[in-house]
Length: 422
Image (cartoon, rainbow, N blue to C red):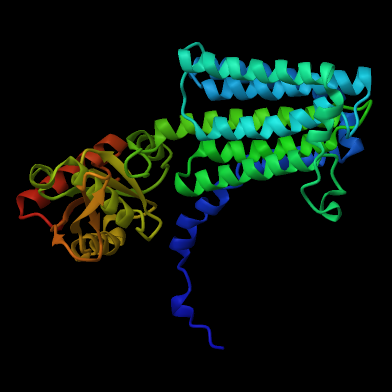
């Protein structure tokens, strides 16, 4: 077998694409790993004893404040569910004795994952709104039903919660009965499917929180509920981290193209201590594309242009500047050093086939335009004009460099478009 080094991914490609796989485990995976290390290290538990005692209360308080301030009702409901499950199980584990056969334990093990999956797959509907009150009522009814069944029909309820549905050889390692395990499997499956269909930071966090909850319920032992509480508090921390991360992306990431937004460019420019160059790119005749084909097609064109610009090499970083305008920052580069890469970007967009075709949607046979790079349809000509400037004695401040690149872009437009000017 021969390995062709020419086909290996370039250094720039690796640098730009390492973030995506890492994003699936950061920060949630690291948080859960920290919980695993803590619960298995007696030295850490002794050293952080006071911290561990305050940890669940601090997380709950921070989560409530954050959820209320940012109007994240799903976070508030998740905190309510997890905290109610934890306090209930702690009470039974310490005061009443709690084993594998206990109705309350198995009922919580069935209901908690299903409720978390339901929250992950539904939209924000508010906490004190009619849909929020319905959710609150459903949670209350579940609590009342478990309490009632435990008091009046413990035998039949326990028998139902311990139905043999899986081979005993596969489930002997866990205190969860088969219905609870199947509930977790169903919840994991639903959330994975939702993440594959419409990946979001919040959806991913619920998947990791579900894993933390599963570890917590498996860690519960009579007389020692602390490991379970630590895992369930960690599940809450994972959900809180997701809200913070989502807020960050709303502020610094363009929702249409997925590129870093103008604010991210501003801060990146302020971090540049030495030499750098900025390229400002604008989609040619974009108003005509919108007027002729509609704003939906215009948005799809911007997305595809963004994909091409994101592949920039030579250490460049692409940003959505606003409207149909993009920016590319080249740290440590001069205009002459980045011009070949900028010209490559221009040619890449020019050579890309932007095909407009119709896609049937709904039972009424209505069509919706779709822009693709292959297949039948009408080709939409798309080109970009680019202006490039660098930090020099005349342009020492970031806004001066951007304005110089903008003036160069204007000259490229005036000179006939689809070209690069400095």
